[in-house]
Amino acid sequence: MLIVANWKAYVEDIGKAKKLFAISKRFSKEKGNKIVLAPPAPFLSALTLRNKSNVGFAAQDVSQTTGGAQTGEATAQSYAAVGVKYAIIGHSERRAAGDTDAVIAEKLSHAVAHGLTPILCVGEHERDSEGRYLGFIREELTNALQSLAPKERTRIIIAYEPLWAIGKNAALSIKPNDLIEMVLYIRKVLAELLHGKNAARTLIIYGGAVEPDNIRELAASSRIDGFLVGHASVNPHIFMLLLKQLV
Image (cartoon, rainbow, N blue to C red):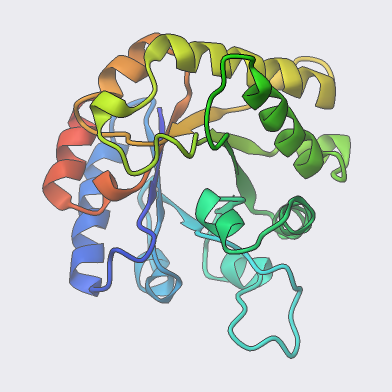
């Protein structure tokens, strides 16, 4: 399992950040598991400095720019310079803040150009009985990947995060059968965008009310490759309980 812990702006204390990092290092020693932390940008250097563990680090976003007179922007190159290996791009909260498909495609290009592995977030606002939400997912994937070179597309991790599940509890999250359907559909769309067997090799992770109460069932029965965890990743006790479900 690949676990990406998106701390968002919940963690504002370096002591708490280091505690969560210590928990992550313990879990990362389990065979076959990979954990990636996405802390607020000011904490990255303190956590990545002399990091000899298997824990990876992600930027919560990257700038659309490549440097210069852009106050407040953090470029893909600057993240790579401090040991970051991944970048979350197209998260629903960034899309709500104004990131269009064109902006997301540009950020993907910058991330790949500087050696980062993008974690591309896609997800529908709501589900309808006619299946129009499937077309929405297809459009998000196509618009994001079509400007990348074929080889660059193979480096993307897909994070499926349905907006209707975000912020809910486990009982109101997606069910395993529905997640299986979506994983298969995403791989079908990827098969049209990637050459050969690359669609089958692409990692697909799930985000949206991932908690200790549902992560084991989703991991065991949905063909998912991992999870994008939000609020459950910022409470040390809950995060530990969540990770123990996968050991």
